[in-house]
Image (cartoon, rainbow, N blue to C red; front, side, top):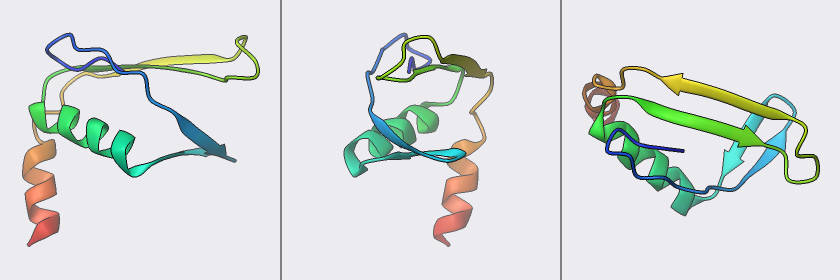
Length: 73
């Protein structure tokens, strides 16, 4: 993952059917990157099989902080 400041992070997740499950530390890294807003870039590849790779961007995470605050209320 790359945050809007260009910082890159290597995260690990377990794949369960149609979703990824991150541990608490990696989840916090994603959360903090989303709080910064801007564009986040993701590249996901399978450890066992480097053939499978998914790349996508979240173009505008600027409203994530607002949505998160509303969830806390």
